[in-house]
Image (cartoon, rainbow, N blue to C red; front, side, top):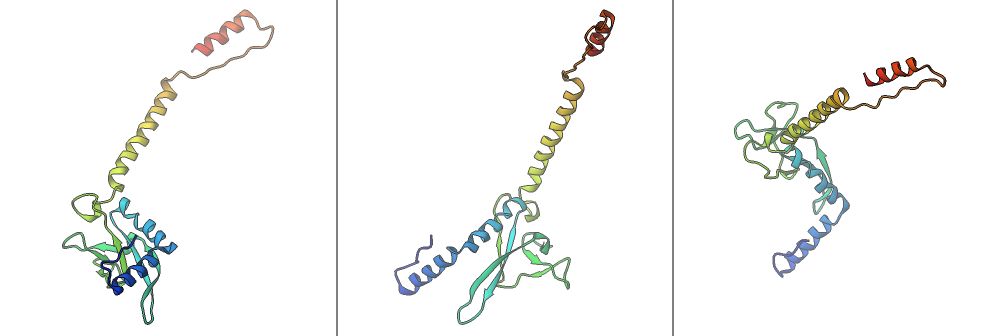
Length: 166
């Protein structure tokens, strides 16, 4: 919900325009795309502008984190990887990108997402379940069945019982 900063006509008009912008379906998709930051530490969408007398966002395009790098000095400033600067990247152009950087943890942005801590838990759980299944396979109580034909001798039946028990 967008509320005007004041009752002035310009503020009310601006609030109405912004409310119209966020009511569009593609804005909902933008929010969903930017939620990728929770897992990976940051998420970036590119704004494609409709130019004219008034610039308005035409669409928002999610960009993979591999298209960006972090500033080597501070470890938190996002930089765009280009052919000219594939390692260090270049400054993000103004008004071209929207970045979501949630404050999930202190420290470098590269380790701020939930992927690293959750991958440890996933591995522990997965390997733990696998180990328990192996244990049950070897030491659990398996169901063993044996059958004998009608009219089998007592010796055949006893041999079958010993084989099933063993």
